[in-house]
Amino acid sequence: MAKLPEKTRQIAQVHAQLINSVVLACHNKALLPQLEPALQVAQNNGWTELVKRIRKILAGSRDSQILIGLDEEDAAIILAILVGLQDPSQLPKAAEKSEAAFAAPGLAAMINAASGGDVQALSMLGTMAQQMSQTPGSMQQFAVMLKPLIDGERDLGKLTKNMDEQARQLMEGLLSELSSLESSKSE
Image (cartoon, rainbow, N blue to C red; front, side, top):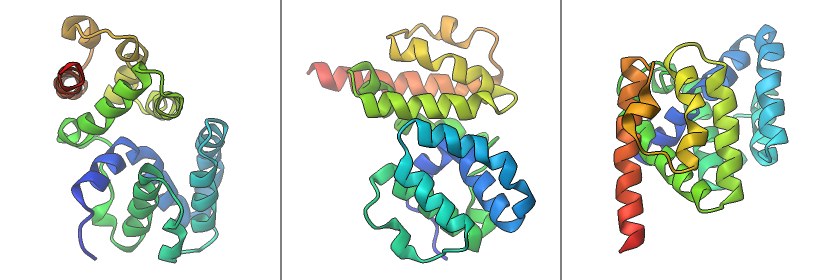
């Protein structure tokens, strides 16, 4: 199967934990109870269509028709799951060093939108923060800084205090992307 398009890979990288968890649960139904809390959080945050489609995949559906009617982000997540089921080498890596390069543009766009009052972006970031906070290490550290970023904090030193190198790289990339978005908005 062909590689995922770049934008889809960026979105998938942001949701790597969820995507990998779904694929693992498809292969090992004993993992379903561990996946259920993440699905409940997503459902409670308004991602009802995404959760509905994930449940279809968990029940055995692999038809590409499952993508019809989804927004861009949900479709990217579902596509990444379907591709990952067929070719596990295409699954996003939760601890991938190049994570900053893939995740920063998508995260920056969501943070920028949430800062401007976009309720859906704020909800998505809440779900992401919940998922990240359940991941030990750098993503857990990063999740804590999403709220200050939404509130307008841009001081790298404050945002990366006590972060490991991976989280620091992601934050640097994110601040660079936010700077670009904010300067193009003011022009």
